[in-house]
Image (cartoon, rainbow, N blue to C red):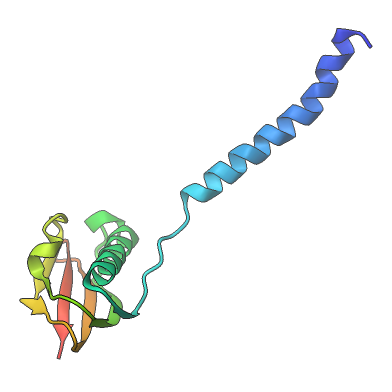
Length: 127
């Protein structure tokens, strides 16, 4: 078979495979990170989940550009090993923590709220 006919026939195979690869790559780029609202785990796992929930809420509200305040999540958590303090969230400058600490072996309820007036995510302990 001459090369001039082989190249177009190969394109019928190569182009769909490349399109499929690009589609799969792009679809994995937008996989949402899950926020669990009921946790019973170590402080490291609870802290990681709280940060995921904060990030999801911040993204949902267009990184502080949204004009409407909303309660994004109410999370029930039980910490098994050590306490979580407000300084644990200092790596996110748009987060304000309105509690001193979350002690272990006690069930806590935390509200994650987007505050449009302050352009912040608030973490509030519900008593």
